[in-house]
Amino acid sequence: MASFSGFDQQTLERFADLMVGFGANVQKGQIVAIGAEIGKEEVARALAASAYRHGARFVDVGYFDPHVKHARLANADPQTLEFVPSWYGDRILALGDQRCARIGLSGPAAPGLFDDIDPALVGKDQLPAVKESGTVVNDATTNWTIGPCPSQEWAELVFPDLEPAAALERLAEALVHVCRLDEDDPVAAWRARAAVLIKAAATVTERRFDSLHFEGPGTDLVVGLLPTSKFLAAQFQTVDGIDHMPNIPSEEIFSVPDPLRTEGVVRATKPLVLGGSIIEGLEVEFKDGKAIRIDADKNAEILRGYCERDEGASRLGEVALVDGEGRIGKLGTTFFDTLLDENAASHIALGSSYGMCLDGDDDRDRINLSRIHVDFMIGSNDVVVTGVDAEGGRSEVLSEGRWAIG
Image 1 (spheres, rainbow, N blue to C red):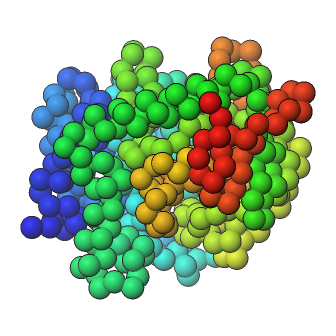
Image 2: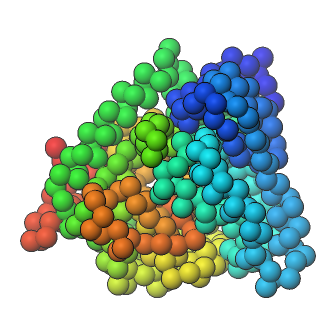
């Protein structure tokens, strides 16, 4: 029998065990922090139970209520919307200091909730995201993961033509598939896929391209790379040597770009959900590494607001490549959730970089720093990615969704 989340009890427990035991790789005696939104209690509780089965010393579940955020945006002084109490960031840093595990749940909890709010105001309040999360990730002090949590509201957004019960069942089935829970041994399946991605990341890194050129409908974008940029995939390791898989699902290889060398125009190939709202028809123009024009068919002001947070917010912090062999892209479904949609298509991110994507420290003072990190999807089978070396030589990297290199 399906539960409130759409997962039957056995699937819910398997999902929780995959997230806890493989994704975050919770260690015996660790404190585990779980982040969820109101409406995701059933899955959060399953994660907590699994964490205790895996030997957690304490599980702390924090719930964010988007309706309270709506009340703030609708009624508070606009000049206060960027304010975040210090203890929000202090908590994240403390999780790192105490070498805790972190697990987050993605998926729209209240689609359309902010449609009646001025998009410029939505762009000012970025909670539940806080800048200290980037610090902890770059310092590699927590083992962490994020996974998708099905809900009725999300299901009706993704499958609006289905009856509500059928939509939830369809969403749950899709998430089971993309998380590889339909395999007898999901962990083994993920390790096999990770091996493919890690090999692809090493192959692209070995070429030491000076830049990547994205070409497709509405897109002609060159993203510069640093001399020591390296591509990573699927697996992180903490400073204490704990392996973990930050995203379940994960189908990407990613690296750190040169924040001063992005040129051209790019058109998003999927909608972007940001601040609880949907940005559609996004187009961004870059010059000398900076986003100088942000347009969209809907809600461009939200991303513009994010890009005004600091100097680094309008520059790139990540470039990621996704091939067509992953399970998400093959479904042909727009999930309106960055975790899933970014693993269906190549993407770039405005804002903070991941320092672990460098070989050594020679370029560490050149990477982008920001309070934000916003991914948006720019890849499809119609977008060709070409690597350009320092002498101008060109080699196709991705074409028609297939690796064209190595």
